Image (cartoon, rainbow over all chains, first blue to last red; front, side):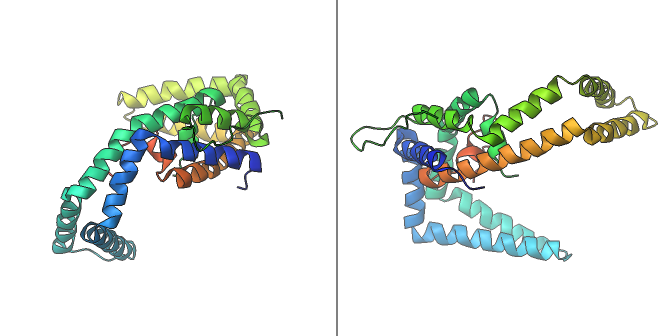
Length: 121
Length: 132
């Protein structure tokens, strides 16, 4: 849906304010560390590639073998236990209450739960 | 509309709560939001909707307690849901909800892109903390 210029500017300003928030900055730094680490980013990319491949085959009616699913879960465990990825997940968990607080301000003004309506599910 | 936008001063750290208030206020002036609030109020004050909702709650409570051996409550609940869905007021409400949702999603996309983090999906108190 196209936004009016005024709303777009206000949304950009909220995004910029979030980016400057100390808590969010810590998450963004953790995110940057993962992106800058070739091993971590390659490992994570591999996990998503394998996952998408398995899902596509499953949706096509193929029965996945126990070995394939076990290999995927092992790969996922490797990803989750990578120190940089684990730190990024931890930081995301850490900033969620801050993001919720800001979304609640929107909800207070609107008298409608902004986060629920904005989620694309 | 005579709202003052907070122009970004690079020397001054922007306050997300202040920015959220400004954005929320602007959203309350949109046709989508106004239509949604009107539809919501209409639905909430409609006697037929209230009556159907009360009946549905009674059947849902029975189902929650597992007292529906012959599936009569489940069948009645489905019938009431269809009856509710068929009400013009409810149809208008659902359409308005879809529109306001599309508006908020578009706003969230801009906020998230600028912030560098998915905003709405991570901004719910009940949000899963299982990673991602």
